[in-house]
Image (cartoon, rainbow, N blue to C red; front, side):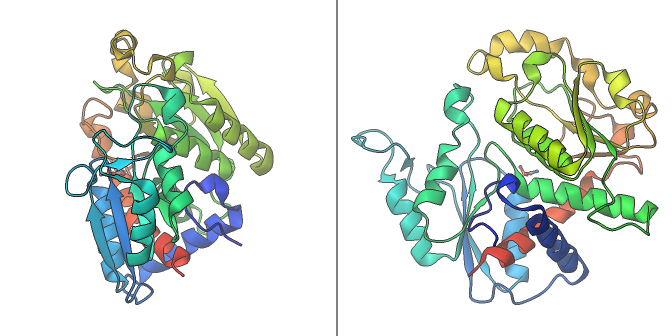
Length: 343
Ligand code: CP
């Protein structure tokens, strides 16, 4: 049986994820349906979005449902998440009421809540998402907190499509097995969320790929929880996991290059000190020279992406780049997740 919520892919069985991907592929072939007729989803955004908001809203519409977008602190009341507190600060209502009330109106709730970037020991608890899941009477979907499971499925779907095009005799479940996958950190002027990197590591190892985490120094290695997930996945799926700080050797022979920037966890709340390190690693940009070291690798990124900072124009505009396919797949994946969870 599948979990009640979609908080992380790691909570789901491999066959459950394969079913979601097959359902998404079916929606890609046949986009309209009535799976959500008369149903609704409340999309709670604590942070900005382009792709996630658009694909959830239009995905619900295309299946006959309706989406309501709420931005607490902007067009909805600020919410308190701590328990047992005297609420004499900014928050006007408590998650215990918010989640229960939304569950009386909507059939599903989506939540986007990025870290606050001050104290990783606090952010790693994912307390906003956990609180929604605890109090919500209806299924909750993670729209990106400290992981980004919808992005994971869209990414895998795009990779499966790409490699099935080259290996038509293979199956979606098997085609990624043994592929050499490089998750590369890239420079960005600001420290960003580790969510997509955590997710990429989790899903790439889950699919049985040989995964290299390429990052500037050991300080950029991801949180132990996600390294442990990856190690467990490797043991179960037969792939591999290694960490590299050398771009040329990591890119050599790669089949997939996936790029993301993130802030180094030991510097949470002390970003000026981290800035000096990241500035020394601008050369981690994905460019034609590095891509030429690969085995004709496919390139992708979750978007948004700063051109000529994270990846060069030539890479983004090359036939190897499947970032737009991955972004499109968000629509199909979201429909798969919503239709699978709605009761
Ligand atoms: N990739 C992604 O989640 O995009 P948005 O931040 O625009 O939603």
